[in-house]
Image (cartoon, rainbow, N blue to C red; front, top):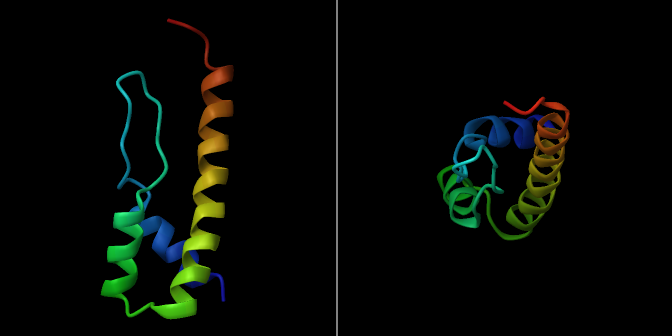
Length: 74
């Protein structure tokens, strides 16, 4: 059942704003909404997709933040 969410996250994982100093922002609602529209995910399925997708993306952003903390300054 989780393949739908992983496939969506893999398709959209680089569709985000990247800051000038390497920071990453969450994937936008517009990108998720468009992906769901393109893949016929609507109604309650869309709401569930958004929720679980956000959990995946939030975990990714936490991972990136921890990785940046451990990175030695240049």
